[in-house]
Length: 301
Ligand code: KIV
Image (cartoon, rainbow, N blue to C red):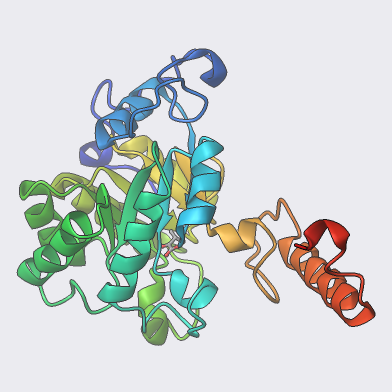
C-alpha cells in the first residue's frame, strides 16, 4: 500500500470522523433531507464534513431527471456517457458541446432540487483555460447547470483554477478518463502499482488545490481510492472505486438494466428495464395486430 508523505496527510479536521445523525433524521442530508431548495456546492462540502455519503446518477432528459429528482438523488450528472447511452456513438469522444448544452438544459428543466453538473466534452477544454472558460460559461449560462465536470488531474489544473476563480464550480475526474480511450486502447483499471498510485494521489490533490469541489475516481483499486478519500478535504465520487469514497455515481442506464449487452463489473443493476420495456412494446404490438387495441375505453364516438 502506498505510504502517505506528511504533505499528503489530511490537515487536522479535514476528514472528520462521521459525526452526522443518521441520514434520515438529518434535515440537511443531501439524500433524505427535507430542504426542497436546489442543492449547492456548499451543501456538498458540508456533507463531507459530516461524513455523509451521497448518491449521484447520470441523466440526459427532463423526464428521467424528474424521476431521479423526486426520488431524492441530490446530484445529477449530464455526463458525456450520453455518447454511448443516449446518442448511439461508440464512445464519449464524438459528443459535442451543443449536445451537452441541449440535454443539460432539459435536465435542469426537469428538476427542482438536484445540483445539475454538466460534462465538458472532449475537445471543449483541452486547448487551455480560456477555451475551458468559454465552454463552461455556455453550460452555466445557456443550459443553467450549477457546475461543470472535466477530466484530468494535474494536466487540467489550470483549467479548473480559471473556472473556479470565474465563479463556476468544477467537479474533476481522475483515474480512468474515458475521453482518453484511444490513448489507453480500452478502459483499463488505473492506479495499479506504486508509481501509478502516486500519480493518482498527485492528480487528485492538484484538482483539489485548484479549487474543485469534488473529484470523480473511476476504475481505481478500492484501497487507493480509500487513501485518496482520506487525504482530501473535498468529496470523492467513486465509480468502480470501492465503498470508501464519499459518494457513488452510476450511469443510469447501467443501474436500471437499460444498457444493451454487458455492463462493467462495478455496476449493480437495480432493475431490468430493457426487458420490461421490450415486453411492453411486444404487448402493444400484439394488441394492435390482434385488434385488441384500441378498446372501447380508448375510443371517442
Ligand atoms: O460521463 C459520465 O457519465 C461520467 C461518469 C461515469 C462519472 O463521467
